[in-house]
Amino acid sequence: MIKRTLYFGNPSYLSLSNGQLIVRLPEVEKNHDLPEIIKKEAVATIPVEDIGIVVLDNKQVTITQGLLEALMTNNAVVLTCDSTHHPTGLLMPLSGNTIQNERFRDQLDASEPLKKQLWAQTTSQKIKNQSKLLEKLGIDASYLYPLYKNVKSGDSDNYEATAAVFFWQKIFGHINGFVRYREGPPPNNYLNYGYAILRATMARSIVGAGLLPTLGIHHANRYNAYCLADDLMEPYRPFVDDIVYDLVAKHGINTDIPKEIKVELLKIPAMDVVLDDEKSPLMNATQRTAVSLVKCFSGEQKKLLHPEFS
Image 1 (cartoon, rainbow, N blue to C red):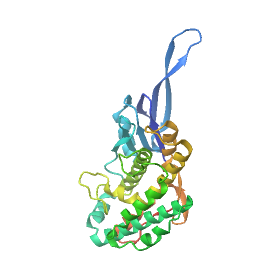
Image 2 (cartoon, rainbow, N blue to C red; image 1 turned 180 degrees about the horizontal axis):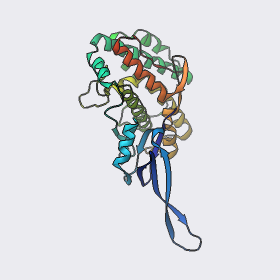
Image 3 (cartoon, rainbow, N blue to C red; image 1 turned 90 degrees about the vertical axis):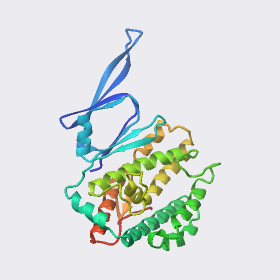
Image 4 (cartoon, one colour; image 1 turned 90 degrees about the horizontal axis):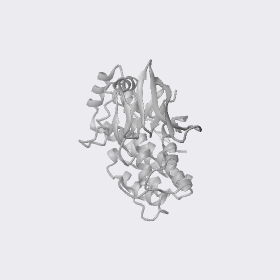
């Protein structure tokens, strides 16, 4: 079952009752007999077990501890947004799997050669997916072919960075002044928002698989609590890039992120991707990627399952 992504951009009160997320929000209604505006309360209910991600994007959203507990118990994640409406915080369960201790130990005991091989696989697939996206857009991507075919252990030649320079120049080269970095000009803001949704989706899958999201196979920033999510999401990034490219073509670029853009980016967990020759929603694919990493750590298999852009 595809878990739902819920977005709250208006003042609302979120609570729990009988396993249901209860949404109460003020709704304004014009009374034809009176000149003034009268407020009434609108109520909606959503089963907590159906929820995968909750996005809180208004300073007047109130959420109860009981609801937070239920969301964590059901391995949902909560994203909070800042005053610029960009995701800035991520709340996740500490325990998401019944044999977590065993999987933690396998993860902690993983050798450096194994992690370097897994990172090489991840980097290779990311570059390959970037090339497939460029080809879909009618852009010559032959420069990337020898890069993804010859990634060495640990990506010692830093082909990921080399490919990134080429990729960003080609996909958004028509936008004057575009450079890809977090605080850069639009459509960096669209990309940041989409990647935040992707990161939350992957982090949820990692915890559900019984792994530590902090301990990556490549990323190792001491201040980053989601290094492993940042590792495993790399081959999925081109799917977000594809969506953003289409959004720019249809709606142009804005310093703020319009509602219609957010609506499309919030659909990322439900978009179809191909993994191991099977089409499935991205959220399901990230779960399979995380489980494949568990099997690599335990010695059951040697290759990660990564999505194929097509």
